[in-house]
Length: 390
Ligand code: 3PG
Ligand code: MG
Image 1 (tube, helix red, strand yellow):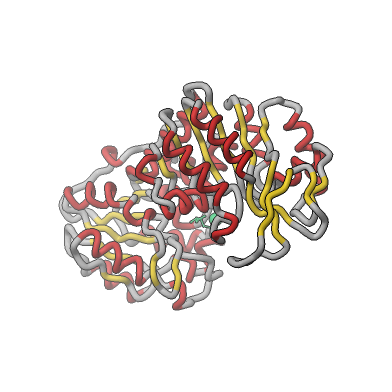
Image 2 (tube, helix red, strand yellow):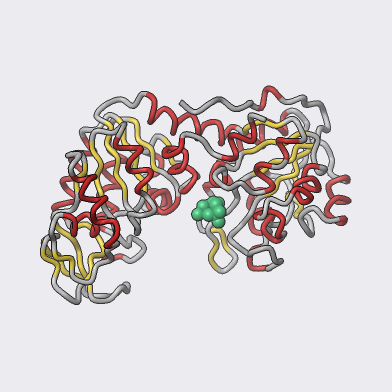
């Protein structure tokens, strides 16, 4: 059980109260266009609630990793515009983060209006968690609301700083994410099936250990499956393997809860028009690398998911961005969508996959956090939540 955090109702709000709102508007951009606005639409319940109470909202977020320098490619301008469209009211973008000019712009904001600061990571103090930067930021609001679930695992200035000095609460999105994810660990209806993909098993060992205490079956896909296959004695050709994790994978297999692919899609070249073959997972020829689970494995995984009462899926089954390697991820996405149990898709690439493939509306909860969701499951708490309890 994750310890509770203060909710919006606990805040001292009056007409014109200025709310510093930390959101996670780190959306995927291509050529300056937003490819997926889930993280913006997901922030609307909190924003609307605050606007109904005639607050002023000073929204802030990071975008990408500009590493403490101003870089126009990472401007929040497209986000401010999209948020304005969704709200049906202009959202002005400050010229900077917490400099003199932006302070002036914040002071002119009217009650019931929203503005946005520039990318927090244009300032080196954000990631360094510099107290002086946190103080400057805190002065832009009377109260602080954290709705940035996707960044709650980062102990950065805008996340852990303001709650020390001002009344603070979790927004609706953050609260809902914590409620859903902690319920998976506390009282999942069984059978509880976890589908885990992704590139490196070393990134996921902690979360796998934590999940094995709670789930009935763990289905492995993505490149990390090959380290498990090596642990079983398979020849995996040129597939990605983390040799130093083989022993650990063997121990995980010995729990009897872990399923690995029996067949895979392989290629000699990772490209959209590459020739792909379908082979047994135990005997991948030299010169070929695995890039997706095969149809037999996808069918098995779909059957296991169909019988689940609770499903958590994180990480694609293959390189789904390329059409020849997308089938395994699609089959799993469809099975999760069709499952009658309670279904959660955790952040990042798997959330993008269910949305792109059109299944998001049939999943109970699509998390806006990838790393944050896994870290919450593994450790049971996050720096952003701890800060709010101060
Ligand atoms: C994310 O997309 O993972 C979050 O917004 C956090 O971003 P980061 O991984 O760059 O800290
Ligand atoms: Mg990340």
